[in-house]
Image (cartoon, rainbow, N blue to C red; front, top):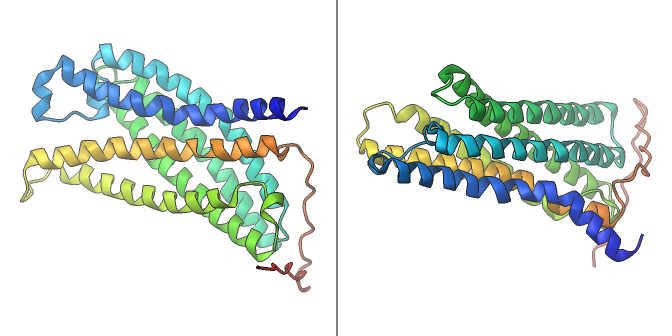
Length: 275
């Protein structure tokens, strides 16, 4: 395969991940601005995304594009699971630590599928159609997507730590090491934002020493920021996928390292020579 062909193939593989934030962030902003344009009285009562898509003129196109975004996410997810599995196979690990990583990987897959299902549910069933199903989908999406990202960030930290400890060169590693570091830190930021969003969700219905309008603005803006961060985190994998395809790292060519025998000393880590 020529270099140009490989680069084009790499971009094609990375495109689904990159398109997730490119489509969803403008979509969310459009939904809110369009609803306010149709209902100017909501300028004094900033609407949530749920309220915005309750208008069929907004909710119909929004739900259809969410189906496209969900399809893109489900296209990316198997590539990510395969890539994480290959990275785990590169490491010399105890049976217990390998099992922990594999369990986290399975949880990541299950929770991402559940979060995607919740996203579809909450957009297909608006308040006007079925309030309870809408809220159920919303809870599933926000909670499970947050858990998926925290698990992915944890895996990134564990894998990056093992890569460094075992002296595996960056060029031989499945992921870009810098993206491991960025993704873990971003996951912690997202976790803090989700906790803040949950607190605002509870506080907005209580009497507070600040105006209800200020709380509603903070709540609705936090909602948009959380959703944007969710999809930016997913989109960040496009950088890794592009790199993997260009370097031929997605092919099943790396055999798993042997696990240390219980009670025996683990093989020494390769020494990293630093200039």
